[in-house]
Structure formats: structure tokens, C-alpha cells
Image 1 (cartoon, rainbow, N blue to C red):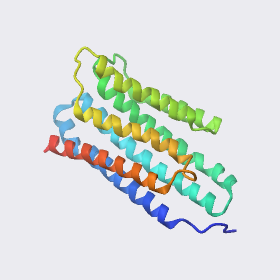
Image 2: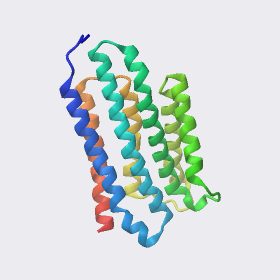
Image 3: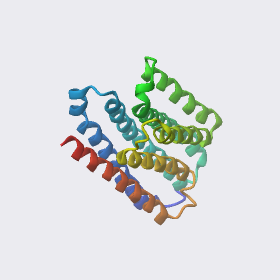
Image 4: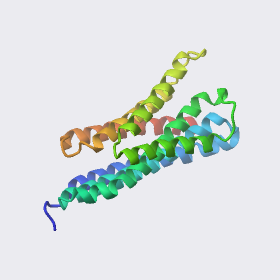
Length: 218
């Protein structure tokens, strides 16, 4: 039975935001293909995969929000609990894979083991599994935050002491991903205007990253 009117405006905002983010992510992935094909540079390969996984993560993030809206509309949070963790876990899996790929893009010269994709899958499945079993996003958020902190700290304290401006931009964007995970569980309490502001900031960041990649590959 319908209890509350379906929030089409919120759905439209989330859908538009998701499509923009996914578009930029996939365009970055496509734009860097030729450069990787020419150079076979491992750092570029991991950089590309980062945005492929991140785009997929946002698609499942939208599915999660859709289930939340359905739960609120029908005032049936058992429905929300039953289904929302499937897209959340998938979103968590792909975003963890993205962050791991981002990490590899900075430390690949130090990696002395093979099968990085297999190891990344094991880690991502393990982290997402914990989030599913505990029915709590905190383990997922904490794990990704630790990975992000390591990814940021490594180039700063490495011998090169060189930090790319582009690197800083997409690290900031991934930090906003952690914020987005946190806000997913407070959407009923967080003002809609603040949600829109966070979305705009994320779009601006990914847009700047795309612009830099576009000029880099031009």
C-alpha cells in the first residue's frame, strides 16, 4: 500500500547525477585506451581500470538509492533491508576494486607479485562480504578509507617526493566517494540541498579530471 508519494524530483536528481558521473568515468577509460596501447605503461593501465570500476560502482549506487526511495514510499523498510544490500555490496565491491586499482597505479613499480587482479578480487569480495554479513556499511567505509589514506600517503613519503596535481584531484574525488557512502544511510536526515551540493562538487571534480585527461591524450 502506498504510504508516501514517490519522490520523483529526488529520483531525477540522483539519476542525472549518476549518468553524468558514469559518463565521465567511462570517457576517461576510453580516452586513455590509445595511450596505453602505445606505451603499455602499467600505471596508465591501472588508472584506466580505476574509472571503469568506479563507473560500475555508481550504477549500483543508484540502484541502492532507488530501493531506499521505494522503502520510504511504501513505508516498508523490511523491503528496503531485504534488497538494498545487494546493490550496496556490489557498489562496495566495484568501488573497492577501483580504489585498489588506484593504489596499484602509484605503487606498481614496487609490486613484485603476479595476479594482482585475482588478489584485488579476493580483497574486494572479502570486504564486501563483511559489510553484507554485518548488515553495516562501516566495515566497507573503514576499509576504503584505509586504502585511500595509504594511496595518498605513499607518493608523499616516497623518495621521489613528487605528487601530480592530477593525482591529488582524483584522490579528492575518491574521498567524496567515501562521503557518498556515508550519506547513503542519512538521506532521510540530510537536507536535500546539501546532497545536491555534494553532487555538484563531485561532478566538478570528475569534470576537471576528465578535462586534464582529455588534454593529456590530445
